Picture 1 (cartoon, rainbow, N blue to C red):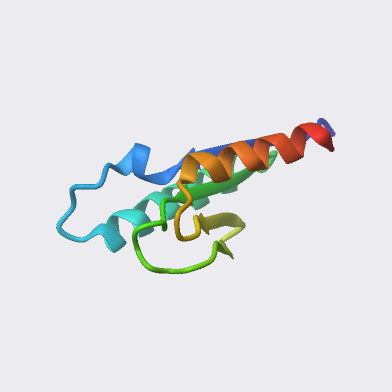
Picture 2 (cartoon, rainbow, N blue to C red):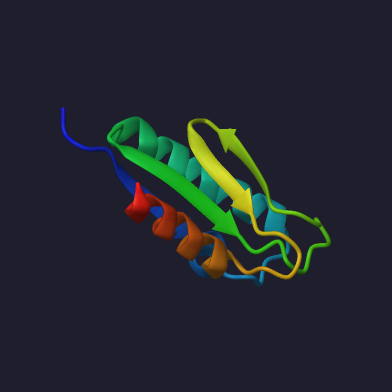
Length: 92
């Protein structure tokens, strides 16, 4: 079996930010990634959303249907979280 590759998605870069129901748009993207994961089992998938304006405080993450969903912490953008993930993976 080959190496597992990672797919990291900046959620709002994919779905945009202008939605009547932003939560539904996020859920639809995550559902799409879950369906993709079922087909391409060799990929680890992480979706990162900006949480810096949402008042969530610290960074939060959860695994939904084998897809990791991360909301950046207050004052941090999804781009920064993605850079940190990639930097950590390179070191490993």
